[in-house]
Picture (cartoon, helix red, strand yellow):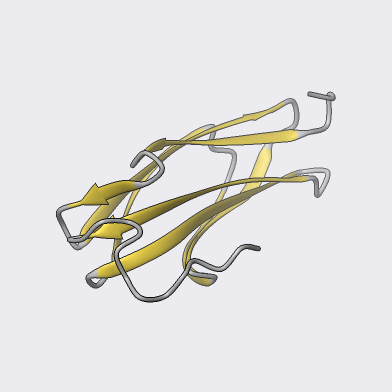
Length: 105
């Protein structure tokens, strides 16, 4: 990784997992040489949370109805460099169980 890159890794839930609660805890680790100024959490391209400040690890709970979701976390540092990570999960069902195929960004 270059010095000004931002690396985002989603620790929980794991990709392709089934979550048995509508309150989904998202745990994220962020690696960046520069301070982080904003972190956004998306579910199916809809922004669920926006956090300001220099955070390297976050644990946030978002409410999701039953269904399948693409969760994306985007972090922006003080030099406006971005990093992101994404996972596919199912809430109270298998991640690939719906009739809708997940959209690829």
